[in-house]
Length: 317
Image (cartoon, rainbow, N blue to C red; front, side, top):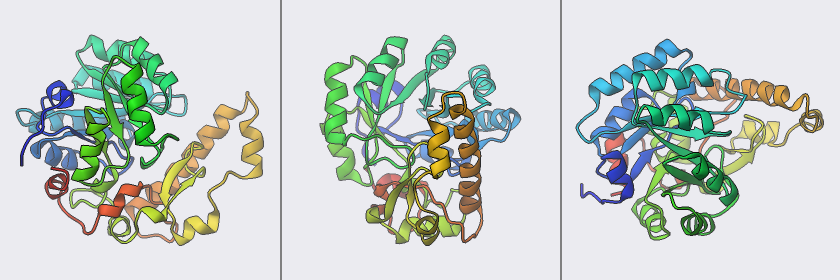
């Protein structure tokens, strides 16, 4: 495969300007090693590990298998809903990684601790205000999460968000969302991004330790089958519009709406919704169940069969 040099390939010493995006329950060490061997960077949500001992084991395994020119990182949810955040950050800083991607909160502490250890920090942003805030805190790049992203997405299109951030920020912009093939990748680079974070196309990979039902859903459904739901984490999230999703609806209950407006209760309501929602996603992702809440983005439109990570990477090159 031909390599395409950009600021991202230089920054992470990788062959192609692609980060295999962190996906809750989907991303794993096996996928990450296959991604690194295919010339892309790989990222795993720290929340995919039940405890820090398992996180340590993953880091050790990734470091042992990392090829020359490989790069791996972890995603940290840095708001109060993630009660494991501080210990996860400490483990990553102690055992090492090439980069951290922060989501859903202030990255200030992560930037301070990670950069002291030589770990790069990229921050998910959905608008210019937050992009400029994290730039002022010292992050290495922003990840522009647009309205085509899977999972938690932004409101602006890639055509709006990328040029806006490129024009007004002095740090690099990585695009997240709407990349399912080579043409999509080229489009994001032309808009000014130094690379892309790609998740949904890798769900239907042979290396993913999820149910065959979930993988086949990404093959069978397309971009028109993606809907937004408030039923997972309290923050709008994209899922495949299965019969079960249609049945339970995508909006918060009236009680959740009322409680979310109460400043003293909002944090606890969001935490409870996060726990209930992630439990449903876990069950759907790991076993056959009629309660199918499968997280994915519109870029599954280009997923036509279950393939290896290396074959999926070829789709972009």
